[in-house]
Every structure is written in C-alpha cells, then in structure tokens.
Image: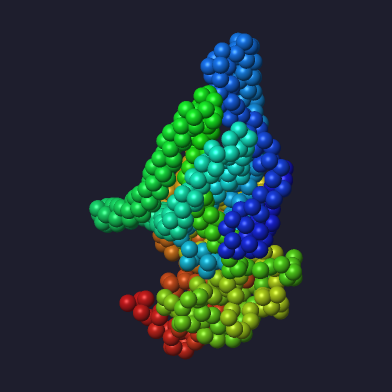
Length: 592
C-alpha cells in the first residue's frame, strides 16, 4: 500500500465533488481502478462454473435423450471441463480478494487518516459544538459503510453486469423468443427500485443521525459515571440512555421493515417470472422448438438473470447507506472552519510581548458579544492575571492568546507582529498551557510529561517533577515515572493530575505560560509549594493566569479585572486594592 493518497488529496476530492456522493466515491479510488478491473476478471473466472454448468448439463441431457453415439465422450469432455473450472476457483478466488482488498483497504485507511488530519486542523469552536461521539461514529462506522459500498459497486455491480451479459448473450444466440421473454423481467425490477429508493434513502439518513446521537450520549454517560454514582442518579441515567437506545431501535426497525418489504416484493415478482419461464420453455420443448435439455439451460440462466437483477435491487439499501456515509464524512472534510496557516509567516523566536488593540469577539451562532473592546499592553516577562465573574471573557482571552480563536474586530500583536499574519503552529512551539480541566492520556507518567517532545533526559524529567511537587508521588509508585496512570489519569487524585499537567507544561521550557486555574484542584499545602515553583519558573517568561481565588495572584505584575467583555481595571495588586474599585469588592467578597 505505497500509493495511499494524502489527507489533502482526499479533502480536495470531497471539496471538488461536494454533494455528489457517487462521483466522490469514484474519485477517491482513482489510481486503484486497475486493481478493481483485475479483481473482477478473476472473480468472473472464479464464478465461471456457475454459467458453464447449464451448458454442460444441457449438452449431457441432450446427448442422452438423443442416444448420441459419442454420448460417453461428450459426458467425459464436459465433466473434465467442469472439474478444471472448479479447481481453478481456488487460485482465482485468492487473486480476486487480493486486488479487491488492496484497493479497498488503502482507501479505508486513507479516509480515516484524512478525517483525523482534518480534525486536528478544525477550529476549537468547531470541536466545541460537535460532540466527540459523532466524530468517532464518522471515523469508524461511516468509513466502514463506504468500504462496504465500494466492494458492492466496484466488484458486485461489475460481476452482476458480467453475469447478465453472459447469460443474455448465450440465450440470445440459442433462442430469440426466450431472450425476449427474459427481457420482460427488467421493467418490473426497475419499477420496484423506483418505488423504494427514495424512502430507503430517507430511512438510512434518519438511522445514521440517530446512531451518531447515541454514540455521543453513550460517551457522555461513560465519562459521567463517577458523578452519576456520587449523586445516586444511576436509574435516571439508565432511563435516559435506554430512551435513546429505543429511539435507535425504532429508526432501525423502520429501516429494516422497508428493506424487508423491498426484498420480499422483489422476490415475489421474480419468482412469478421464474415459474412463467419454466412453463414457457416447457411449452417450447413440447412443440419441438427447443431441445429438452435446453429447458434446464434456460431455467438456470433465467435464475441467474433473476438473481443478478435481484442482487442489484438488494444492493440499493447498502448503496444508499454507503452514499449517505460519504455525505457524512464529507461534512468533516469539506468544512472550512479551520485554522489557516498556509503562506503565513513562521516565527522561530518568541520574546513574549503582547498588545491587545480594541479586541472584540462573538461566538458563532450567538448574538451576545463575549469581548467588547479589550485594550492591554503586556511587556516581556510579565505575569498578568485575569479576574472577574464567570462569563466575563477571561477564558476567551486565554484562547485568543493561544491562537485557538482570532478577534472579530481589533488586533492582537505578539512582539509587534499581528497574530493573524503568523503561522500559529510555529508560535505554539514556544508556549505551554495548563488548562482548568486537566487532560491526560492512559500512558505512563513519563509519557504524559514528555508528550510531543523527543530526546528528554531523565535529569530534565526529574527537575520538572521536583518543580511540580510530584517527587513524593513518583517515589511512592512501584514503577516510578513509568507507572501507568489509567484512562484520563484515573489512578491519580485531582491534585496529582493537575500537578502532572503542570510538569508537562514546564518541561517545554516555554517563553509564554498560560495557566487556567492551574492550582484550583490542589490542597492548601500543595498549592503553596506549586505556587513557589511557578514563581521561580515564570521569571523572564510572560505568564497569563486566570484565577478565581484572588489570594493566589498577589505576586502578579498586573491584574486585569474583566467585566462583560471589557477590562475595567488594570494594575498591580496593591494599586487595585488601594483604588477600592471592582477588584477590591471581589476580594472582600471572597473574604466573607
């Protein structure tokens, strides 16, 4: 699998053919057409006994009925031909599966890779709005459905077409009357497809969306289990999820029933035609227009034609589901809600001087502005603390400093350069973030500390462990820094998880540090130790802090008091306390 398309190539294909699922499907397999062609050739040879057997059977029956002098010779030759074709089935089956699988698995892997790559570049607001369970469903379930429809379209349909052509061609060469009779089954098949296609597509879409919703809610349920148990809400949560599962079952039931009815009506129609074929060819043999053995030949070929047309009809739900999944995947790959860094200036050095000029921001799909003209100047190496009531815009400002979102109006300058003109990926190599909700993964302590950084020495890890007040914890563990911490760090306490996140930030030796309530989960003793470490490590580094406990920011160089998206006060701790304004009132309120 050396020719897998890049994520950008898949994205371009979906963008070019947006809204055209079938055209998109064909395009994503460009470069693999020859594999499908070879697979079909080997598939036809593999299945050749199915359409050669009627001829062999008719030949033997006709030779026996006519008492042909070479009857035994005819039987032996026809039997040997069949044995050869049956033995040939094994290597042909291997080659058929080999080329089909190479093509399908290459695209399957490429599509999932493209989705993962796109998700890494989509904006943070996009991720905030779309539940992770839905994304997981698109990456796994929808790509699997695309794989299934690919096999059916490129292999199944071509094989069906080949069998139809062979069966109709042989029939036409032997009897024009029977050939015309065979063709009469086609309109009924087409009518059946037209009647059911639209409804099946609608049911598939409903079922797909309900499955995505369920996947998202189940993931939420799993994450909330500790909270659920703590508040004795097991029954409530069970009822909620059960109701969602029943909704999925209802949508699935409706889909199953329409597909079942679709298949049953098709089968009944074709069976009636098959009985008619038997009666018609029997009548022709009675009249002497065809040989007796040809009844078996025509009946078998009619069965082949019926089965092939029936297969096309039965493929409709699978194809409909697959095309719907292409549209679902396309929702991600064609999204333009991405961070665009192409062609922007790369930066190698960050000093840490910031300037906010009339910064305004409103979250998508809302009318209320979260930032309303923020103006700030931050010098290199200063520690700035943002305080204020919830919803005042503090975390939004941090997200702007990280570059997750950019202002709707106004400018943010980094070392005198407009942030909107920079390749933010190069900027973020110089910052470290400790979020309010600690994010860890199920590796070891070492893995979590060194995430994204290569060639870290044991001495460097030891230093940040000491600085983050994790030494006692690490020394108490049987495997030290190589101890596995469980999913989301579940084997650690809240304070330990937060200190581990701080250690991960510190080892990056950043020029800019962003702390969103970094000490909120710590007990008072650990908080003091961590605060002392942070005070030492933030020297000569620009640091932005969001803190609700105002006692933790006394040593900040400046404090910005946020209210309704504006900076209403800005100064040192002592200056703001002396002023006895908004900060003074917040501080006194916390002391009550």
